[in-house]
Amino acid sequence: MKKVQIRMTPVESNMGSNPQRQPTAEPFTYWREADGYVLGYLNAYPDHWTQGEDLDDLKAQLLDLYYEFSKDDLPGIRKVDELVVA
Image 1 (spheres, rainbow, N blue to C red):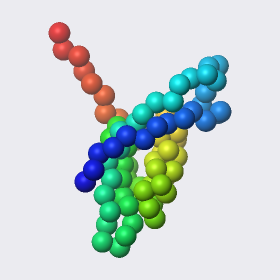
Image 2 (cartoon, rainbow, N blue to C red):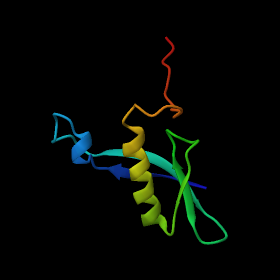
Image 3 (cartoon, rainbow, N blue to C red):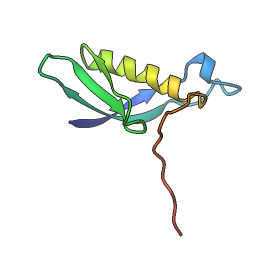
Image 4 (cartoon, rainbow, N blue to C red):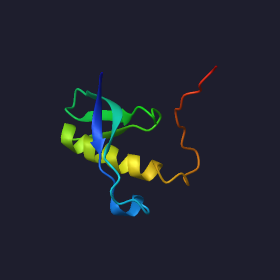
């Protein structure tokens, strides 16, 4: 399994009042299966895997998931965050 980062460029519908928002990087994990397909998930959403015919196709699928999960109105989406303990 490899962990890499993809660059996220905001789509117009998710930009809100700030269309000049800078792209961000979202880490994801991926691997190639025996059948040749590439599977992976966004590290922030490890329960939600997707697949692609190659790495570029997988990245496109992951971008779709990222934008869908960023809406915050989907029930049952588990998210990973950090708790700062002082």
